[in-house]
Length: 494
Image 1 (cartoon, helix red, strand yellow):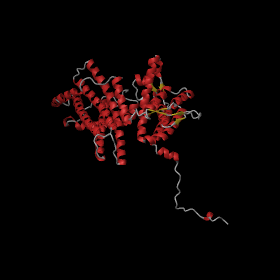
Image 2 (cartoon, one colour):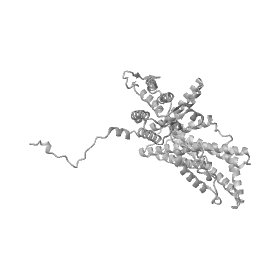
Image 3 (spheres, rainbow, N blue to C red):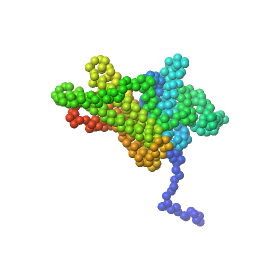
């Protein structure tokens, strides 16, 4: 007869438990690695589908250093135009992300990846500059590279220094290198990454030796804790590098003249001028549009000053109650916004004192151009600050914990959260006003900046218009033409 067990039927109500897919679990538990994989693959498809030429996105020395196309640091790092290149880099990213993300934490791992894009580009440009200086080979100015491998080489160094022994060449199992500790274990070194760089250059001669070497240098600095996250998080590093670029390369800052003197002059003379203009206001005269523009510009500047003072208050509160990286991110945002406000005050003075001469028009044009650069920097900085603060709020609410050993005054979760929310509101107000000023100056720019920040700029302009109208005198409300509104859709190259 049939076996006894064969006649036993399974319970149809019992749920079958399926074994979880280990690869899928790893991907879901490492969101930063998953995001970076999807981003690079999507961009590769997008560039292939639109037939984008590599030269329009690549990291080129002449474009970044001489033409100030700083955005190429990020477009070049995330661009891949060959399937083999994309495949090798994505396999390396997956392997390194699976190994390192859990140890660093997903948010910190994301921040370090973004910062490493900027750092590896800066080191690469410095190495090319040194080669040009000591070889006098001007053709090196056209040195270009694309791909995420510079950042990946930095993570390869970190991963190899975490191991006792590294075998950098997969098909030569006996070729391994030990990791040595120096200064009581504070510094670790290994020849494995250097050998891997040489092997990669031998197998694929077209790869960027300078870009990979820059990644190795940054990787050693990262593992030696010379790049603390508090100073090198993207919301601090990127604005700080941009400020240094504006000061030492473009030399557009500092702004000549005291901002306090300029603002005091506006505050003292502005009110009298406004009263005089309104007393002679006649809707039938041709000069009334200029009168309205001057009144609106001065009222808008007072709103900018109020926002700047609010940001000063929240920066002081962050210094007392938040961690160092949160304070530094607010500090660089404040510096950018304050410089932009100072430039706007100087522009108003030039316009008020202008006698329509060629020299005066040149001063106004120059100040408008500088204002466009500073307001764009303010937009980028405030977006980074708002995003990082929003992530912090989410983490605090989820964990119900606010832990930081760097705070100078200890407060509970809810007071610290209230301060952070007020800081976000001040940053949003500054962002909206910055977007409005870019439109008023007709200095929105174009290209990558508008592609990434376009929705922010449009929404910010609408909010800025509402704030400007609500802060204006009742007598000035009407159908006047605001400065720059006639050319809101006009774009200049940034």
